[in-house]
Image 1 (cartoon, helix red, strand yellow):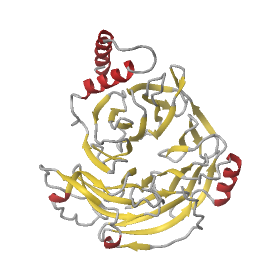
Image 2: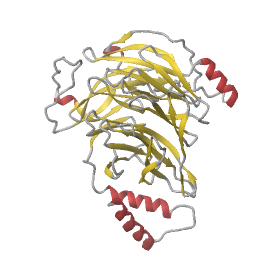
Image 3: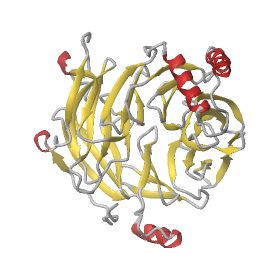
Length: 434
């Protein structure tokens, strides 16, 4: 991977016109045959809604680059997806493509070309603005809904050069540039949280992009996900060190550290979200299938005040890859390594829906503003939209049989057994109906 570009904070205010920013645009679109009359959210609170051509609405699109990040939000119900081929001369572009939600469908709007692969992205809660990361840089971009164009407001280093050098020297990873791994706005949009491969979390004042606080010294590996409390009092983080930590932003100290084992194996925390009321934390934990271990994905809920686990449930037998909470707080969506998405309700963690939207690993998930639809992206270059509750009903048996094949073909001396498989399948069906 190329070395970090050590740019100083700068304000560019560069507007990108549609004609110059669509190099990484769509190649193939699958149009819905039964689109209903559509509507779009206002550009501002008192703007006439634009007339939408129903033929432009899709539930699936194939872009010119692999996708690794996804976010939904803004003032006009937007979706931004990012990815790319990186800085290597592969001919695969890098970019962010913006879509609009229209009655559960997607309308593709425009693509912004990026200088490197876009691995993480976050939408402002009330403005048509998004933040995305490339290498150690964070970019703040406004989307002009009327002109369907982009304005790059600011680019700054979310991992300062001095910090990068210090960590690289201490870890001996000079050949691996430090990366911004995740970012997220708070509810008011006046704070941006970034997490990096330097094991640190930073809090930025927006729109000034001024560093307010750096949380470090607790995680021993790179940050994988962050979220900020609805009232701004706490931050929750997950890391490759297989811990989840809850930080008090007033004191800067860690209040809770979560660890979890399953059958004697340490599980990795892969995602974290505060509940809408701020009283609890939802996390997803997993471990990939190994030679002597089965893969697993588990969702748990912890009480913020006590740090105690309130409920937990296994949602799949394959490791988790991405995770999101719906805007209304009622659903959790979990993407797994077998290209499936599982949605559970937050009250009981029981499954509501499951479907297979992609042919390769799912890399990003987001909900529609009304919490009724899920958009997902994959490294197979595709983006899909799905209405919760419409997944196929025959997936249980398919997944069970796939799991049994993996289990009995594993190199653990168990061999194959038709009788045992039948018993396990029946038991699994009963558990899925709980």
